[in-house]
Length: 281
Image (cartoon, rainbow, N blue to C red; front, side):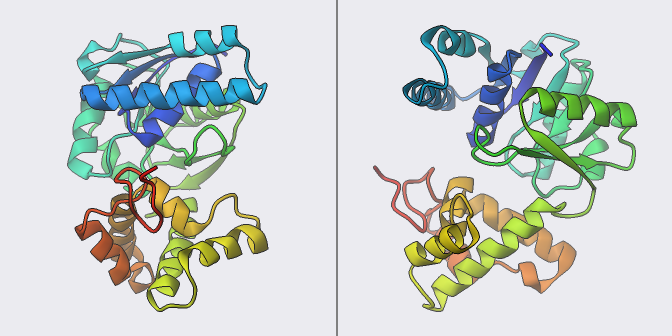
């Protein structure tokens, strides 16, 4: 199913969504105004393509075609009208998301989705003239290897929108689950509670970060441990989500002091070079 899609934001998640869409032979526009982020985005995409070629998953012609299907534009207003799908993947700040969603709606796409992991789909839908064609489409990091996409149905999301979203997810070779719009949905709550507990264990000296993560990987077959995953997601993102879910569900989602302190010190994980692990290399 060939489609034309746009991804708003060229950060970690936006890059992953753009890559898997292009891999599924969609034409992809990435809206990213920051030239430095664009350079980093293309380095990530080229690195992923090179890795796929080394593993025999892709030949040179397919790799070249995949990269050619991804185009950067600097502003939402530069997107063509009538795209099949626009996926918003900007930082988890409500006012920012409301702004970009309203501007995206003006491009008259057939479907609009937010990749938010915690914000209310019903609240975000207030930015749109037609909330029926809007839903949450929550991808997981790293997007190219995790096979699940969580679809979040808002109060006004139509069945037609859900079917379009399910078809798109299937075209990526992924599976979807559908949840209602409650804070943290399903997966963010499960993921965050494990990560916060791992941080509390580290804070109280139960074990080292390496051994806490090894326990999750070896005993429970997680592909990556909760502390390393937190570094990949971004500790500032973890903190924002924790505070959102704490307000919605109570103190079991309260961020531990170690997380608050690390974010204050600028230790944000992989993107800053230092988090629970050293990423400087």
